[in-house]
Image (cartoon, rainbow, N blue to C red; front, side, top):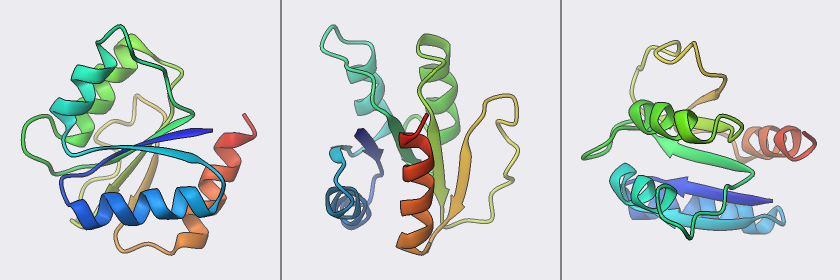
Amino acid sequence: MIVDIIDDERHVREMLAEIADILGYQARTYQSGDEYFAYVTSPQYQPPGVVISDVRMPGIDGYNLMRKVNRLYPDVPFIIVTGYQEVEDKCSDIPHTFMRKPFNPEVLEAVLAELDLR
């Protein structure tokens, strides 16, 4: 399964990509919602098995990114991660998994495994 990771913090992107790799998934990383949405709307786009996105980023934030991607590809699942005290139901109309940073890698492993079974 391909895992697309969007986070403006390089160390977080690299850590998530490393976890995905250890678990046997292929990770593609992006430093902003804008960069990722440009890819989503390009002819080269290949929908992933899941998108992991930070909430607070310059440009398109994680919630708006999820809404925009969902309009084009409603079957692409999202995991929204944040280190802030976000309201979990900001996008309650779109199915997604919400995780707070820091999170236990085993929790991420369980969520990815569940999505991989779909």
